Length: 145
Image (cartoon, rainbow, N blue to C red; front, side, top):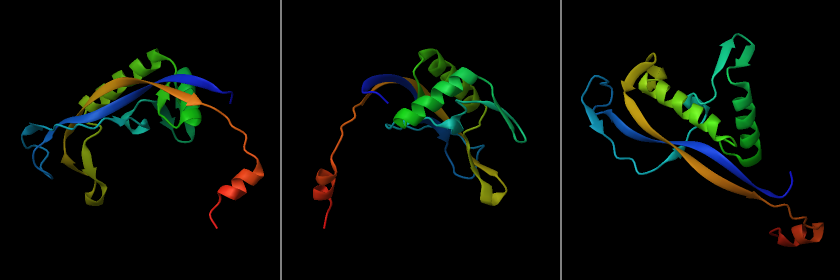
C-alpha cells in the first residue's frame, strides 16, 4: 500500500434501553445510559448475505467489497463511501428494532434473557498509513536480550 491518508466511515453503537430484570425479558423497559460508543461488526447485520448452504451471496456486492477492503487495510469495520455507511446504519436499526441484538443464553436452549436496544451513529475517521524501511541492525539492537 502507498503512503496515504484514508478517510473511512464507521458505524458505531451504544446501548440505550434494556429490560430491567435479567432472565425476565417481559419486565419494564429502563433507560441505560452508556457513555461508550463501540464499533459495529458484522453481527449487527451491516453486511447482509443470502446464505443457502455453501452458496454465500452478498446482497450488496460493492458495499461488501468496500467493507472488506477497509477492514483489510485499517482493521476497522467501515466504508470509504458514505452511502454504504448510511445503508449499513439503516440495516442495523431495522435488525435492532426487530430484537436481533437481544441477549440470549445458548446454554439454556437459546433462552431470551434481556431485550436491548441501541443508538447508532456514523463516525468519520482519517487513517494515516506511512511506510518506513528499517534496516536489520536497528531491529536487532531494539530487541531485548
